[in-house]
Length: 316
Image (cartoon, rainbow, N blue to C red; front, side):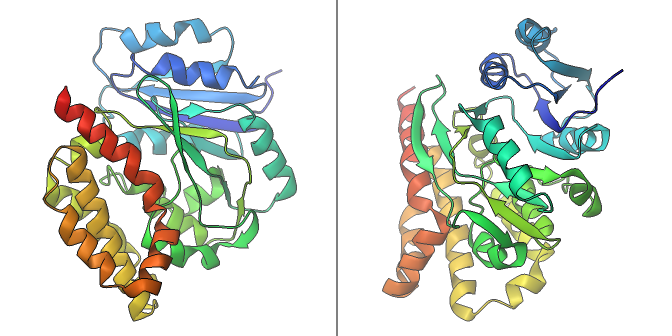
């Protein structure tokens, strides 16, 4: 008799042979009994990604599906959640990692907060070769929170790394899943929608790794500044009601945050022209406002590794 999995891991893959073995190895090390791994591969790579994953088929419950016509990662992820057999789902991109203790932390969260629509935790940045970099912290205290109480801070900046959230599948389906046209801000939009539905647990342990490298969506997408900015505008439009309820000071923090994000994305590609205007937007918030923005955005956590990547790409 086939056992119902307690967790479904959705892995959208496209030309993923380089990093996928490290990603799967990090998951296999967690003894993932009762966990299903749904991999959706759209890359025309002559089977390279599947060969890279082959050593893990006997160690993990992997369900592999080639979906050549389903290119966006958002589409593959929505399909994975629709197909999932478990009541909770997580995203694990082909280049991200689980750190030691991740599944234990997830089990504890599900037992401690059985009615939460989502639980989240801090993450670590990971270099292309797998070296752990700085922490990507959350601006939320550990424990259980009303989702609406976290939403204002999340509107300022998406602080949640993609491999971190554990989401109730029925909540994902209830909000219609990810907006598939959003290639950069789809997860931010998703979290904001899910937070409307109930309580969110914040895990204390740091058990996921978010890899930054030259082939990431941030790097590729930032080469088109107008398209990159458009990703943020769609989310603000989707959540215009929440944005309009913010104080003027907090609205200015949101605007400053978008300016900083766009400037940093451009800088990671070697274009530093937007950094000074973005800094001016932060300074205009005033000393207290700027301090609150820095806390809510965790921008300093993200600044060093991304600018370091930009310098490396310029030297390459």
